[in-house]
Length: 210
Image (tube, rainbow, N blue to C red; front, top):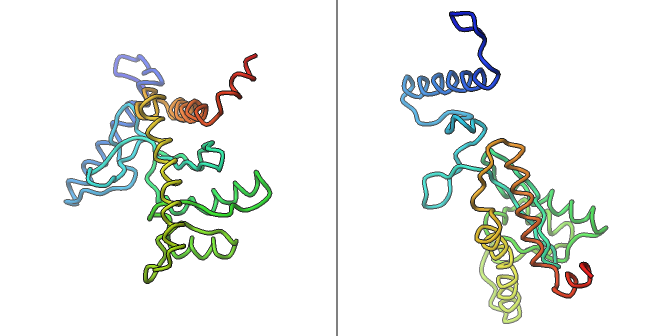
């Protein structure tokens, strides 16, 4: 691409021009068709790879979406990371298979929130002999033992919420300042690694640095 006086645009400016051109095309389509929805909608000129993600009461958030699993020792692993919105329930099977690949066996139980408790995921866990945390489908159980197990599962599952809270408050997970896809992925991965250090006993740190 060349300007009228014969000077070529830099590669950075060419990329920006193409993004602006695509943004104009998208906005014109939305206006002409009287709609608010379009695939791969650009919401940032500097980060055109980002997509709006619908979240609860907020209309939308913008950024990276990723799923994290915690093992019995409290160490977290990123199971999926994407700049596009996706249904978290589709990540469960792959996360469980990743666990089996690392350890050689399936977990005894998995502690998940409601979005992962689809019929397909329940059937998969039942087939592999994995107990999925409550609530189950159908009428609630009245057995005291079942209630006690469900309560303990809920307490243990809070470790995931604690991990995200700790990562956002102390380790930069909630304020990623990098701009490129590669550097954003690296920043998120590093925040997970740094947050994992809290799962290592103090004595282990002492022995390691001696």
